[in-house]
Amino acid sequence: MKPTAKKECLKRMNYLKGHLDGIKKMLEKDSYCIDIIKQNKAVINALHKVNELILASHFDTCVVGAALSKNKKKQRSMVNELIGIYKTSNNF
Image (cartoon, rainbow, N blue to C red):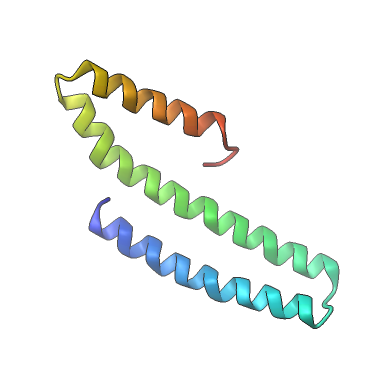
């Protein structure tokens, strides 16, 4: 992973950790259900963004490396991984 992407992802994950703690407190205090759901959706969207950053870095490093190599098996494996990720998730 590119160092800049790693740094940004770790920063976002620390933010998400705090956000989840806040949602837990909302649950403990019996906050309004819709407010909790809205906060959960914000966390889910933020996780999607982290995955986008990781995927972009993956393209810049691993995928480009595989594409530039002459190893057809490695290239096919990389394509299959990407297709697999796409098939198993809505927004990465």
